[in-house]
Length: 426
Image (cartoon, rainbow, N blue to C red; front, top):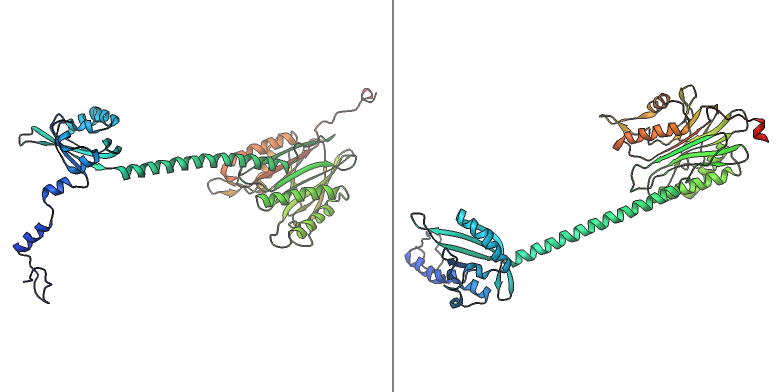
């Protein structure tokens, strides 16, 4: 047997005899000391709430002497005004019905002011079920209240940050919308003997797109147009868009040949972005000749989807320009030129690949060029504005299947040109 206070010898069984138990109990606090100095408050009350017993811990919180409390005060008298009201209207009735209420948050009138606590009460009954007294435990909830207050402040701060972020996002979207519009003509010019319509569909209001288009005069009876798509989004794409638009317009005023214009644009982009961060685009540039009995179209394409012509008889087909290279990738570029005639009722449609690369159906298949041609052929040949309006509805119908910006530019000859009379000349 191991002697008290000594380690057991190897192999010796360690037993605890009655003397060891008595010795250990002498080292422990008495039950009364445990009750009085417990880390929580204890009190017992009669059924009417009069305090019959209370421990020292709770008295110290209250800053009261035992003689001031026992037999003279009720438990509700220890509570704050709000706590007393809650006790009388909710806590006490619930305790009477259920016999026990646990973990209710209230405030007591502590010596240092209102003190948050958690209150648990239980009715003690006799053997025959008659209620005798109420035992109540009061836990210090100051740390919990501080945590809850900090959590509330954190939530309020997070909510304020969310509102501020939403406001900042709205302002950013407004600024981006203004900047996006600055990269496009505010309004297409009026061209005698020609109708024109355009539309820009923004896939994301949070990002600047790189699609662009324009229509502007050259010399009498001749107009230039272009439509392109810069690789990427954001400020970098916007910078390339601005440079491309300026270059195309400035170059066309000196030499409007479509192949020469796109070649110059390729040189400018390649030299500007030849190192570090390469940038490129696809583009169609063309010239309209309105001096004859029809509108002549001469255009060139650098890596851009072919233009589509809707004829007055309701047919629709592409003006092939496949094989052109992306603009700005290599020092030398190959572009593909094409010519066409627009008669009364015909419409030339230029677009960016957002529409043909839209995802449709359950399988999320590409919409494609064949579907676009079929859609155009299904529309009545009512001119550029009618066609653009129909395509605008198509873009909206794609929903989240359309994840890229789309630009549309339609140019057409009115179906019935107004006749000139002698009265008009006088």
